Amino acid sequence: MQKQPQRIGLTGGIGSGKSTVARVLVACGAALVDADAISKQLTAPGGAAIDRLTQQFGSEIITAEGAMDRDRMRQMAFADPAVKKQLESVIHPLVSLESDRQATKATAAGHVCIVFDIPLLVESTHWHQKLDRVLVVDCPCETQIARVTARNGLPREVIEKIIAGQASRRQRRAAADACVYNESLSLPELEKLVRQMAACFGL
Image 1: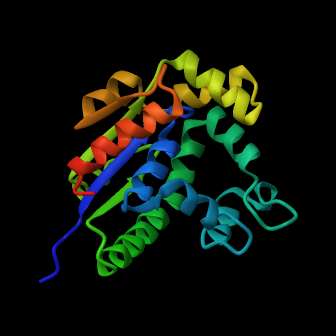
Image 2: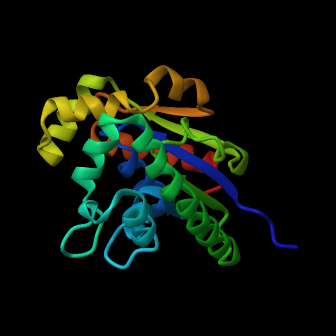
């Protein structure tokens, strides 16, 4: 019987450095299931969520290219919690299905560890039962804002709304089995720390 891989849930606020941590774990041999990348794929032109999104919200949230207008949808979700809930009811089940498919494929390929990169893991009601451990990447909110401003050029008030719409730092740390505090670490220091953690995950 094939041994089941360790299933690590990776989460952290926007700008925390979660993607860098995921990249290092993959370099150590982990398989990556990226919930955000799957969501973008589902809402790209021809994506599996497009028809249902059009039914729920109308064609005005679909771009001329046939993708979901992410900026417009974000504004609508920020303005109305009911819209946010509707959007999640369309996207989340599809993300879950594709994540399961990718995890099954990684298991069949013999990976000893699967990392599930899930931005809203703490807010989720179904992910915890699928995971063996939760790894949180943490940093102060001001650091998040500075990093996202430099990376994406978003206005401060937009970044603050995104942070406010996610779990708090305290909530994420409370859910963590392990935590990377990524405040003043250089990239080599962060990579070294993550490689040490990877050994605990069988990598």
